[in-house]
Image (cartoon, rainbow, N blue to C red):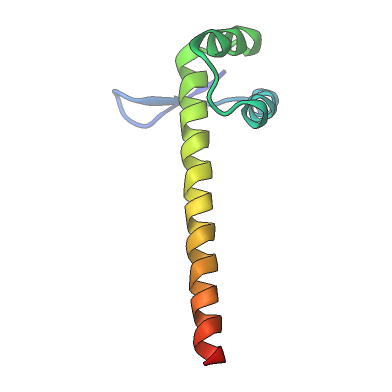
Length: 86
């Protein structure tokens, strides 16, 4: 695992494609794993527990943002369609 430094106080570990695939499969099965499940995944993927926990948090946030933007774009397109039909 390599580490990208953003400043002297923060860093972002790079997660390998293999690990991302495995985390993605776990996420599709269960988007909110327990602490024990996170520890098991981290050990199996040779990552820190905190890296796995943050990956799941970020993925849930990304999914939420995508759903919200899709909902808003659908609502806007329906509003425009209804305006045209009047």
